[in-house]
Image (tube, rainbow, N blue to C red; front, side, top):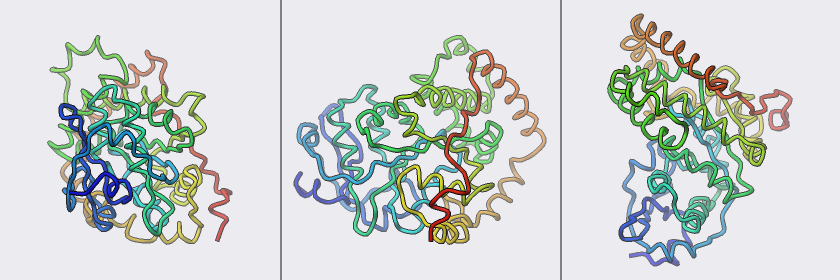
Amino acid sequence: MASSEQIAASPEWLPNRIDARRRCVQFVRFTRAELEDRDFLANLKGQAEAWVPFAEVSTMRPAAGPARFIFHSGFCRSTLLLQALCGSGRALGLNEPEILNSLAREGEPDEELVAAILALLLRPHAGTDGVIVKPSNFPNRLIPLIMRLLPEARAVIVTNGLAEFLQAVARKGLLGRQWGRQALLTAATYAGDITRLRGQLAGFTDLQVAALGWLLMQNWFDRVHVPAVAPRLAVLHGESLTTRGPAALAGAAAHLGLTLPRREIDAILAGPVFARDAKTGEDYAALRARQAARAEVPVIAEEIAEVEAWIAALAEASGLTVPVAQTLDLALEHETLAAG
């Protein structure tokens, strides 16, 4: 089994999950090819594993690269943004590492342990200018802690409008609806108070439940986007990646401190990243056509419109503008667009 020194020295050894009962962290060694795969890291087994006690992990402080994160509300093109920003090879994307889900399940994890795990995730890989970490949406409760522990961290929050979000939930069928219900139950533990609605949840449709989870995420993003960290957090609406691709990529790269010249942005936009589905690798146009045929039907469109009106009323009563405003600089005059 690899020693603690070997694990700390190699960025291929990533913290994967914690065992609170044994007070150990599981590390998994991933090959470069696995790290660059489309699949979520949480779904990959890796090549080897090792367990290290909390006390040893907490003392690990390897040299970390720039702290860059993509947070998101789910089903909003965040994976597409990660793949696009890493499309030229300047950065390596860590796509939904399980360790952050594991930490979030602890509620109030030990800060020394979290700081060490973040440093281990942020170790640069050969030939890159560091990594970009994109957690799943489930550990969004950790955003304030991450930004506080890493005072130089920069992050883009990706979200989208409710109708687009619900269309994505419906297109994914049963799994999408189950995911929406789980997302609400998780967000309700930290992102907002739904006490008055809990007794009604059993009678809500799947899309109502998913929409309520989306509303809690908008509330949370609004709350974490406070003056202390606002300059380091920028909100991007996912649709901007397709409607204003060059500006969105340039703005996201600049905000994260990643060099991405115009010629590389053009190549990424014209290449396979935008032609293929970000999660499956399938031809995007063909996949969307199949999804539209089975899910974008009048009865679902009618339900989505009704749920939108309901959520708008809840948001207005709460004094919340939804979705949370886009704050990422999309000015076409951006220096990164003018470069190279």
